[in-house]
Every structure is written in structure tokens, then in C-alpha cells.
Amino acid sequence: MKLAQRQRLNTLLIGLSAWLVALLLFFPILWMFLTSFKTELQAIAVPPSLVFEPTLDNFAIVQERSDYLGHAWNSIITSFGSTLLALLLAVPAAYSLAFYPGRFSKDLLLWMLSTKMLPAVGVLVPIYLLFRDAGLLDSRLGLTLIYTLMNLPIIVWMLFSYFRDIPREILEACRMDGASTLGEIRHVLLPLAWGGIASTALLSIVLCWNEAFWSLNLTAVNAAPLTAMIASYSSPEGLFWAKLSAASTLACAPILVFGWFCQKQLVQGLTFGAVK
Image (cartoon, rainbow, N blue to C red; front, side, top):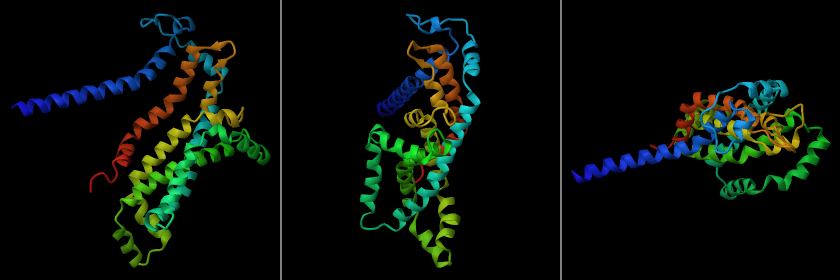
């Protein structure tokens, strides 16, 4: 009896802890959402005003001042385009590393991951000069390429872990039936690892959508995504918190809705290979 009560107590504590962590993580988003409906005076009031009359003026100002649809379209093109390009490069690489490992395969994986440890500002000047000479500054193509290079190590690592959990015998049987390497990847590997590929693609899209460093330094007007639009509400006179919150809400809303509808594929991919 005591053991059962102790188990129920542990379950209750774990549940309460999970809810507490979830609320702590969600609170900044909630506060940003509430602030977007305040006036500038209400947004900087101390103590914060929890009861206020909501207004849509901030959203109207953002729509008038910024080309929201243009910025959103740039974010969509660069995020989805870079994810597709990265998957086209990462799938063959992960396939080779998972099923045809060489002597230095582990070293290669570690080297790829180590590139993420380099601060982005450390390579800003050479990247900027290369993009300037190639005519890629303030272009969707340039931003797509830099996003692809930024996420490629993570995508290869994730796909490698998913592919490694697929039994080799299935692929060997496919080869004995006369399938080519391309047919093996297309008809066997990709359907089996679809959950992992989907979750990897979703993570890549989110990372690209939220990327601010490269978008601020490599774009100006034509290819500026939503992150650049948000930064435009920071001025030498100070931060306009209400308008900044409204712009941030408009920028976060599409990816939050997208993630909500794709949560099934995300959970399926993250738990891929957990139970055999």
C-alpha cells in the first residue's frame, strides 16, 4: 500500500514539475503576446499592468511601416529552400556514413559537428567578402546557401543516427534483388526513415526561421526575412516594446502554427528507433 502511494506521489510530482517547466518556457511567449496589445506607456509601466484595454494599433502600425508579407515570403523561401537543399546533400552523406563506414567516419562526423562550435562572428568578414564578390549580398539565394551550410552538420548527424537504427539486412535484401543505390535509397531507406527525416526537416525550418545573425548582416531590403523586420523596431531612441512585441508576434505566429500541425511527425521522428 505504501509503495502504491509512493508511486502515485512520484507521478504527481513529476506531472507538476513538467507543468511548471512548460509554464516557465511558455511565459515569455505569453507576455510578448499580451504586450503586443498594449500601448507604449502600458508596455513600460512599472509595475506591469495586468488589466488593460487591448488595442490593435501596434499591429496596424507594423503593417503600415513594414512589408510584412514580403518579409514573410523571404522567410518561407529561404527556410524551406535551405532545408530542401540541405536534405539533398545530407541524405547521401548520412547514408554513406551509416552503411559504408570508413576508417575516418567517426572523425569526419566529429569534425562536422565541431564546425558548429565556431562563433559565427569569427567567419563574418570572409563570408561577407565572398558574398560581395559573388553578388549574393541581399539575395534570397545567398541567404539560402548560408542557412544550408549553417544547418548541414546537424542534419547529417540526425539523419546518420536515424539511418543507423535501420537493420542492414533490409538493405542487403534490396541489393540482392538487383536494386541500384539510388533505388535502394528512394524505395527502401527513405520510407523507413520518413519520421526521422520529417523531424529533421522541421528542426531545420525552425532554426532557419529564427536565425537573425546572418540575416541582419547579409541582407538589407530585398531579401530581409522576418527577423530583420523585428530588428528594425530597435532604434537609437530606444526600444518600442509594444510595437516590437507586435512585430515579434506576427513573426512567430506562422512557425508556431506550422509546428502545431506537424507535431505528430516531430514526435514520431524524435522517438524513432527508441523501441525495437
